[in-house]
Image 1 (cartoon, helix red, strand yellow):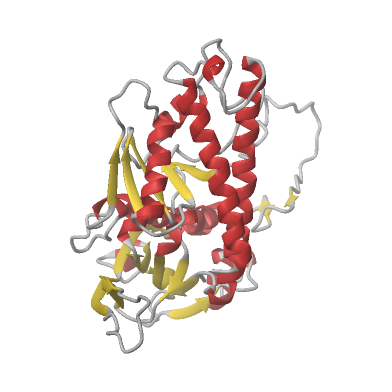
Image 2 (cartoon, rainbow, N blue to C red):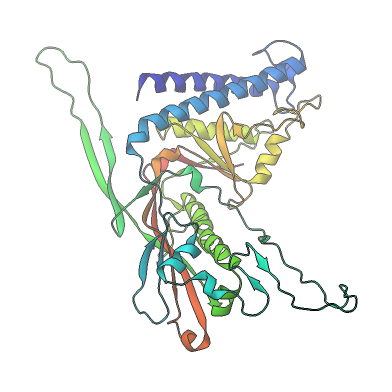
Length: 419
């Protein structure tokens, strides 16, 4: 650990400790009159409390930046999107790197040797494939008045598609990303550490250390989905290609996001955080003065003391964060800031991810640097008409899949908190 990182971590810990003392002195009713850690009126003490929380946020950001600088040399290449396009009747698929193309549709047409202009509508109304221009030669000699009741104007839809409400991706951003070339990620974990280093007198007996390592393994799992579609739909609605290009991979990433939290670990599922053996747990005390924020701080302490790690993030259900954000003092002031303010997206200086994939009443506090999402293969999209009777029915099957393993290297660095 660098000296600078150690100094920043100490600064953060002091600010968090001061916040804890203020809440403890304020008691279950948040009566700031009882607070002696800071001076002034109730309003001034509440303002001081918010200022200390802001100090925690700034200190945590500095810690995150320093840790990011230290680990930059070990960063892995970002995920790549590869499309494999099978032309109808051609048999083997062509592998297409989607680089330099506007989107997956462009790559498909390019490598299938299809000219988009050849797909325009025949007839007197001609529209360019991408709807950039419209030519309308009427060829009508007007002898009497024609108005819109005689020839009703065409109505064009906009290119906007309103997606159905779905859970956003919220968890994967916290997990360091990596790659693997194997069907399973195998690593060694130090499971025994006995240190007897000590000062001895001349000719004294040395203390004996003991180390033991255990092989661990996480299997690469596949997440997949497919979609049937007609040739006419692909040919006649240009926007549908971009729509599928966005929605099909998104469904895979959303499933992956949920598996990181709740995966059972039983084939073919990933092992999620809440089902990982040996993670720590913490249950909020039934004492009336114990608040959810107190439980989160005590979980942070477990990450530090038992996990020997530095907590750097919290995953919490939106309903649970709501109760924290709306905390008030005994005189009705919001502890985390006035409603006119955006309010902190941090608790005790740690960034939070609000995710409804968690059950309300449960949160996760962790040092996420002790986990990794190792991709065996990024999202691959394939299209073919060779499925079932699709060739003679004018249909296409589009499928997307990915392979990855989720690893938790130090289970004790993760705490499941019951709020």
